[in-house]
Length: 331
Image 1 (cartoon, rainbow, N blue to C red):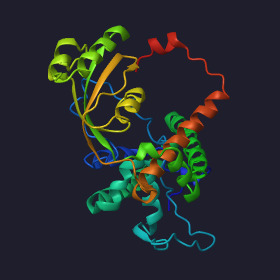
Image 2 (spheres, rainbow, N blue to C red):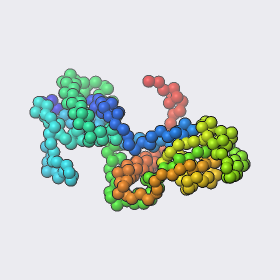
Image 3 (cartoon, rainbow, N blue to C red):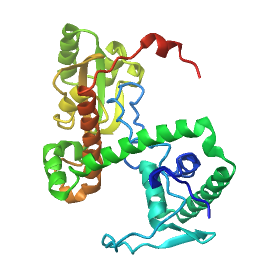
Image 4 (tube, one colour):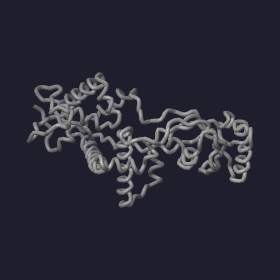
């Protein structure tokens, strides 16, 4: 039996990170339900900044070559069986906990394993291949390769960061904390959508003049947009299509979602200029209950916790980027 000595179990497969690539490929077709569909106005109205990625995936995320029985019995969570061996390799098992750990290491894409038996089997097959390759590497003396030590060091950093982040995030994902987060950010989980058009202008005086023209009885907002708007989509009458809260910039969202169907919003300014907005139609409302969006609340709370933690640790450090070296860097 081949074993990897002198390193912690979480790092034993650090030099064989191929499963990360495979899972990403296998799950690429899984739709990310949390991502909003491209709206009709996507090219015209710049959206809010993209969210930060999920917890970093370390190159060493993986499972040990030797799976030891736990020292004491562990009670599985409700709805989950006790430890189960999914496959054995020369008598050594790969446990369901190993597969679960691997899936969790790739974040949201790993959720495909819950509903896609084909993906689940392919990932298990890759884990088997990785174990066999790792054993072959040990027999071939790959651990003496300088690259091994470098990858192991990188894996250690990533794993420590990932585990610390996971522990900190867990503090704010109990039921009580999630409900408090929901209460403080309820508008973000609104089921309300609006259909709107806008006219983008460069200065406030012109924006006020156009707003007054748009308020006149019988005013043709689309024609005004075509004639006066500086936005790329002006020739489409300034149409933005349907969008939920959070799709547009905060200052745009705030006035647009406070406006009733068929009315003009209060004049607002963003970094792109001044906006004259007309709400064409409204769907849904803001009366969402926690139970309706509990899963979304958990995702948002975890994301906020990760961002806050990153901000915290950066604030305690002295970071000096060597811009010249970065600019001259080549692969």
